[in-house]
Image 1: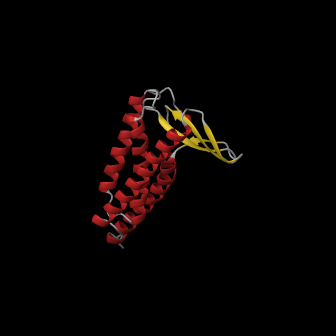
Image 2: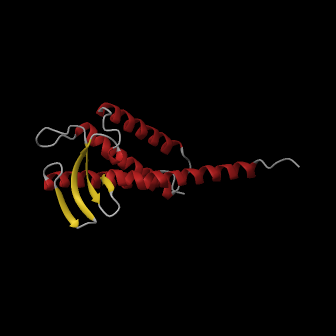
Length: 178
C-alpha cells in the first residue's frame, strides 16, 4: 500500500512526467514536420511520424463536436478521476501509476483543446497527433492517447481488485450467523 504522501508523490511524478513527455513530443512533431500531412518514415511500411490535427477524440471519432464540448467532457472526466483518486483508500502503487497515466493523457489533450494554435493561426483547439503505424492500420495518435489506452484498462483492473478486496474484508468482519 502507498496511501498518503508517498502515494501522492508517485501519482504526481507519473502524471507530470507523462504530461511533459506528451507536450514536448507534440511540440517537436509540429516544429519538425511543419504542416499537417507531413510525414517522416521511421520504418517504411511499419511506423512513421505523420502530423495530423484532430478536432475530435481518439482515432478521429466525433470530429463535428465543438471544442467547448470536448473541453467540458475531458474536464469532467479529469474532475471525476481526481475525485475517485482522493476517495479511494487505501491505494496501491499500481493504482497511483494507473491514475497518473489517465490524468496525464486527459491533461495533455485538454491542453491542446484550450491552448494549441499552430504558427499560421489555424487548428485552434485541435489535438496534435503524430504517431502512425502502418502494419495494422492503427489511426494516428499521440502520447496522451497512449497513456489513456494503457492507464484506463489498468485502472479498471485496479478498481475491480480494490472493490473485491473491500468486499472480502467486509465479509470477514461480518460473518454470517450460524
